[in-house]
Image (cartoon, rainbow, N blue to C red; front, side, top):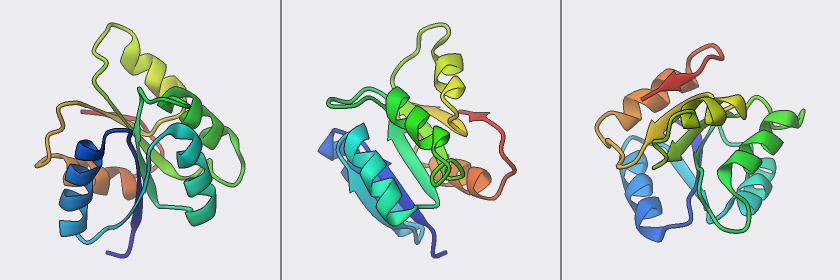
Length: 129
């Protein structure tokens, strides 16, 4: 495939699961443990897609996504928000940051590769799983 995915997730177990699944599908994986590092990695490597956890220390995914989608150099990077938030209004709040899609935890690892492919090759529009 040749596409690069940046995983921004503070829990090593979740990063490992995502890394293993996505590596199996041929993606190149880079990782960051929080939103601040995620922004730096995105600017350095310009990945095709970012899986952005929402609730993290140092800088949360809301803030990191807003910063990335507001900057001219990173605004076109596709971002899928990954969260365990399930409160009314949370999906809208996440998509208002500019995220291209949304997937909730626990992750459906069978559906994730399809969602990623759809978002990578789709015109800008939000997808919710």
